[in-house]
Image (cartoon, rainbow, N blue to C red):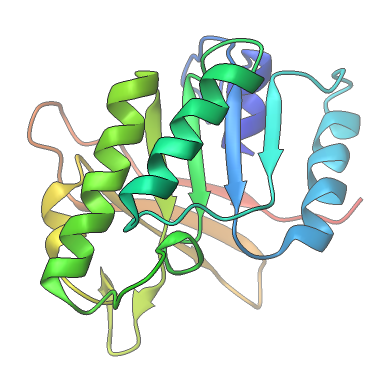
Length: 185
């Protein structure tokens, strides 16, 4: 939803956006992803645009793979992306263990290299710890490196999805929580 709003320049949850190219690096759920994006464009009466879906995961811990990805973005996208979303961290992690401080540091370094090369905002979907919804799985290096962290939850009874920050930002006021209802088309 957020990716499509940014791709089309539509306000998202009451927040203005600037239209720009969004790169969605999908490490899992590829089969239904195109249908979800097409349903969004139909729902809003928009022409699909500014959205590039990559179905080959990035290997964030592998510097050579990051170099290939950065070069591929520069050579094959019509413009620089304004937003790059990775879904999920685990599937885009590459060799290593997300519980390892050293390996998570390599993954954060990979994210930093992509961000520095593209100047795009970065978003990473990451699963919660099984025992603590307020923290992501694995090493805390990612949480320490993130500007802001959100928890997205869906109530199975109401289909209401809420999104709220779990790590307040350092350099700006924390945004209010947002909520929406999931519907099928």
